[in-house]
Image 1: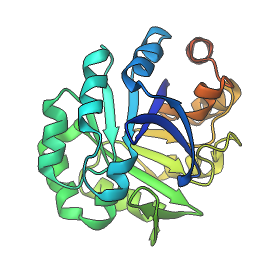
Image 2 (image 1 turned 90 degrees about the vertical axis):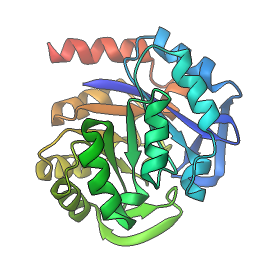
Image 3 (image 1 turned 180 degrees about the vertical axis):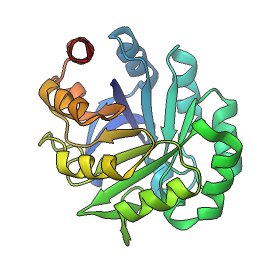
Image 4 (image 1 turned 30 degrees about the vertical axis):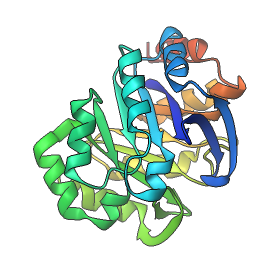
Length: 241
């Protein structure tokens, strides 16, 4: 299982939100590229980057910063936030991003998702961001009546090859992942699933690994020091055996 550090970008800085609330942010760095290099030096093999401004506005807002992050590290980078067109998707891939995450588009533009999956295959990841079982969009600022489990089935039917499942109520809270929710998604999906939200200890990572997720995205816990990245990677590697 991959332990994947997260860098969330807002107003050009590296931040973390509490339950996706844009009014409850903690700023951790004014130099996101330096943060990326730090995680790589500590052993990360993949980085998860979210353009929070882009997610809320529906168009990229931090693309130059993201390009700087991609150039600063050797590890592959996956990016989400504000990707609502094939052109934007292609631009990110052209700058060296390995994977792009489609969240709002998965709910609002099935044709785009289907074409993206057809053209770019493994480079497309579907973000399933759920609160109480229902998907939220536009940087989690809009609720929907779309069930997360239904979205997973629909997206697989369109050719999705990977999901990131985030429990919004847990994200940034350090209260632990929604293991039951993750297990449910895993039982429905026939493609790899990456879990996100609430991870605050190495034990949480071991529990997720036991469920069979491909990766786990860790954000706030890395910045607060609740999780030491190097130790976490070592423990997960040891558990896998």
